[in-house]
Length: 304
Length: 315
Image (cartoon, rainbow over all chains, first blue to last red; front, side):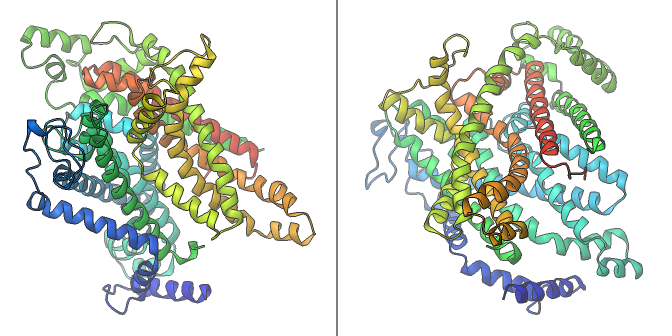
């Protein structure tokens, strides 16, 4: 059964590379999607993310209260029917702030990971496909970036660029470039001597054309998996930066900021720190579950 | 023995360290506008800004600045802190010990948790223990380090009054007090690293358990215990050591956060304070020392790997 699956996969991989659009004829992606739908943890992750994305998209339109509206007569309220998650030190509704905070987390996550994916994958493709010297230069530069602990490098970049959410996206994006470069390069090295690449070269296709139409589609699956898992890390990183006061600036809510505000008041009300922490935890877990499921679905040979 | 591998690995480490110095130097170069103006704030006089520019060497050409800075740094001269005008090198020196202690204790806690869980779940894939272990590691990877730190402080310091919520005592002064202070921060960082390591140990062990030589050992009629400890685990260890090496960078990332949350006087907290005070030379020094520390630990692990498995060649 397993042999049959991988045989049909390797066949469809070749079909996919023959310049065909990803249509119904392409069974690699359809098979993978079916396997993903059967993956229970991945579906649980996807469900959690659906809720978070809905919060991010509809944001201020669906909050029960104004997320920045203060009510000093109702500070540090415990969770109740009126305020589902209680109120904070300014009497602001925590549930409303959590909903609006989802947008910040997702925005930073998506933009940071997009930066990392585009730059990292581009560098990795170049390194894997070009001459030895280019490869060495790019990959040693990646080794250097990779030597810095992620949060520390992000903090250092933020220190130079200045506080704020836009710079947090850039900083987190830069930090994750080497991971994508390594994955893309590894995948290219695995296929650069396959017949279909040699055939494309023989037919006179240029390097950029070969990279974009023949190499890239074949290295997509490890990159898709990495994008999902990196989103989890990026959201954690944004929360950490905001927790340290470097990311989102007041009064705008972000989960990391809410946590650090909650930390100052946990003697008065533990709830202020509990709910933002849970929001981060569930979102990150959603991306992790989905990423693992994607890995299993896209690479059945790794399945156990 | 393949000494070429050792030499190549040492050269690579040297290149990486040199690259680290360049990246660290670039921190001040990417400050938008005039770094001296940013450091002193909008109300500083033009003379003061010009004075600081001269002190930091910002009025020189780029490469001259870099090489002057590098040649001083190599000799252990990281300049003076902008805040208290004291030499940076001794400040960094005092922080290396606490950071290193925290990293090592976290690593040990991580491995003590991850090893038994990873091996047991590899021995019985699909069992209840395996599923619980998988969920445990997923939770561990998803918990924000700083949140977990705060929750542990609330439970063990404020409510149960068992452990101090923050601070540090040197191990030479009072070992018991040192231990009491290090438990919570080390567990916080160690728990996250344990959950990642559990998965790697499980899959390294699974790979080996399916290998032909393990089948042979079983076919010879060796007791299962011997098969696992003498044949499987020994070979799985090679992969596990590599993974620990790769984990070192991630571990230090967690340590930076933990140091801030627990007021641990390490390099991470020093770097964080330097950011708050816009003390760029101090920040540069702290970031550089951490990155070089990580590189040296990685180098050590790679050389250890070489000793464990002489077949390895430089890829």
